[in-house]
Structures are given as C-alpha cells and as structure tokens.
Image 1 (cartoon, rainbow, N blue to C red):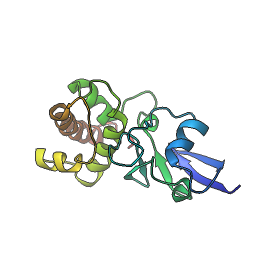
Image 2 (image 1 turned 90 degrees about the vertical axis):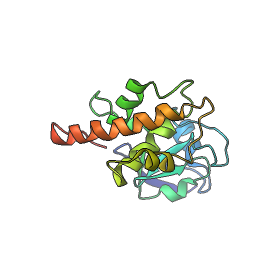
Image 3 (image 1 turned 120 degrees about the horizontal axis):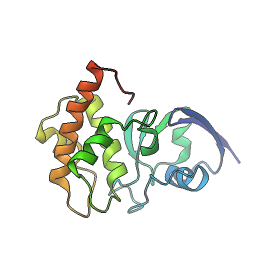
Image 4 (image 1 turned 120 degrees about the vertical axis):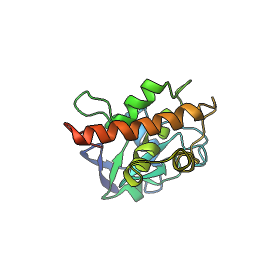
Length: 164
C-alpha cells in the first residue's frame, strides 16, 4: 500500500492508504479530525472543505494522493495557542451558524477568501462564499461574520498578530 506524506495543521503526517481514497475519509477515520464533515459526497455542498496549500477544496472528492507533499489545514488547525482565529471569533460573535454542520467548511473558505481579498465588499464575500451551502440559510450572518473577520484580522496584524 502506498504511503503519503503531507503537513496537517502544521504537523508532518505519513499515512499508508489507497491513493484514490477521499481525503475526507483519511482525515476523519484515520486521523480523527471530526471537524471535517461529510455532506453530499459529491463536492457540491462544501461542508467538507479543507485548505490544500491555502486553496479551498472539497475533501470528499479530493483523493489523498493530491495531498502528497502539500499542506492541509482543517478547522482544528485554525486556533493557535488557545486563541480563536479571527474567522472563528467573528462567526461566534455574529452567530453565523445555526446547526453548525456547514460551519467548518464555511470558515475555511472564508480564511482563503481573506488571504486573497483582505478587505472584501459584501458582494465579494457573497461571491467568494457562493459554493458553500447552508441548509439553515444563515447567509446574511455569514457575510457579516466574514466582513467582521476581515476587520479582526487587520487589528491582529497591527497588534500581536495571529497565524492563519
């Protein structure tokens, strides 16, 4: 069985498994990261989103072989030293969740969006988050939370700073 090496939430990993096995399955079943959620299994809802070298990907349709030599970030890797990432803090403050099932995928997509667009307009947030589905229809709160996260991120870079 082939072995795959990648960095997961800042730590080196090596896993022996089938090359075409979904990254979602490896993360949840082999590595115990339950923040990565199975939604549709077709890459359409994005509840399973992780960042692969900083880009949001649906882990349910991403074979583990594509993670080889790359960095994988899950929601479990966002907080640093017990301090919430600005996106996590903003989602909490804005109540940008209801059932919470889509939240980890939403947060990781927001992190990627804010990396490329640090001060997004409401329209840019709506477009950037467009592929992530929320069954509870918390979209207005999510947009508000992402814009708040941009402000919190800017404050963190002026002050002590925060990884992510």
